Image (cartoon, rainbow, N blue to C red; front, top):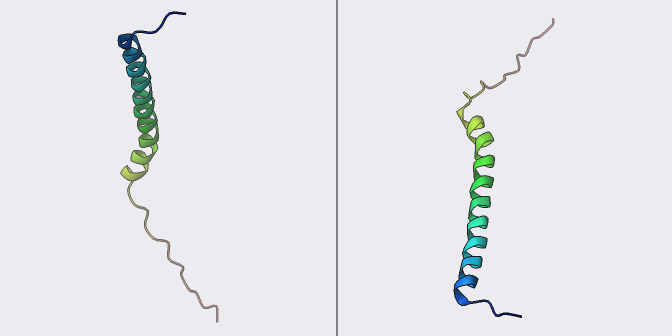
Length: 55
């Protein structure tokens, strides 16, 4: 069994780090879309109950 050279190990570690970074960026983008849409909607007016006396 051949030993892996340090240069090859470095490339493997960098590749794994890059995959993790891309995954985190994709996750953040997917989560940010609904959050942004929710914040860009105009605020709903408060609902007040009207008291009507039937006398």
